[in-house]
Length: 137
Image: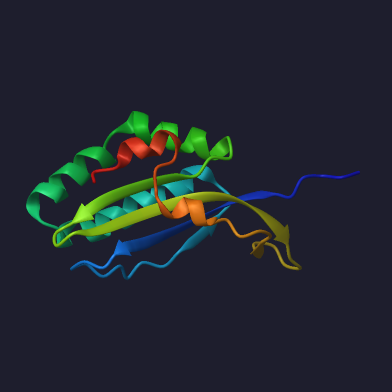
């Protein structure tokens, strides 16, 4: 009997174009799409105060859009990645992405190994599904 590999969600932040903001954020792997979206929102909130006032207020408003958050969770459950992207002062670009990945269960409970690279080259330009509405760039 062939069973599909369990699904998990790999979350990370990128600084696509060097700017004035450094991202000291760790990545996350979780088995819950809601937790993946929560990580994106909390990570953006961590960096938002480092940005200029207008970008901060735009980001803050987008993070409170509950329909977009619900859409992100639904998209992840359907196997679609989601992202939040914003421009930084000085021409930088920050993005937070959650990708659905397949995992191989390891010996102990709670141990996960990503089975395939979740980040194809085409994913570097971040505009995926319902979450693309989160872009402030």
